Image (tube, rainbow, N blue to C red; front, side):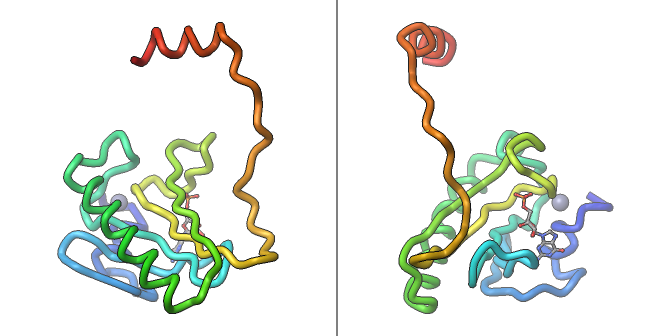
Length: 133
Ligand code: 5GP
Ligand code: ZN
C-alpha cells in the first residue's frame, strides 16, 4: 500500500519509537497515548482490518500481544491492561492498516474504554443466535 502510514512505519520507512520488531511485526509507541506506554502492534504486511487479516497473522498478533503485555506489566508496573482493536470508522478506527492497541492501565487513570450496559431481550437473543450460530 503506497499511501499507508502504518505500512511505512511498520517497514521502517518512517522512524518510530520501536519496542519490538521481527520479520512480520513492529510494536511502536502510540503518538497520542491514552496512558503511559500505550503501544501499537503493526503487522508489516498491509491488511486494512480484522476482516482482511490472514488467520496466521491474527494468531501471531495475539501471541505477540500476550508477550508484550507481560513485558510491559513488569517494566511499567501498571495495574491493569487493555487490548483494543478497532474496525471501521464507527468503531473508532482512524488508520486503516490493522493494528492492536496495548494500553497499560493505572489506578486512578482517566482512560475511557467503558460503555453503558444495555439489556439482552429474549427476542434479540433469539434473532442473533438464529443469524450467527
Ligand atoms: P485507531 O483509532 O485507528 O484504532 O488507532 C490509530 C492510533 O494510531 C491512534 O491511537 C493514534 O494516536 C495513532 N497514530 C496515528 N498516526 C500515528 C503515527 O504516525 N505514529 C504513531 N506512533 N501513532 C500514530
Ligand atoms: Zn498499510
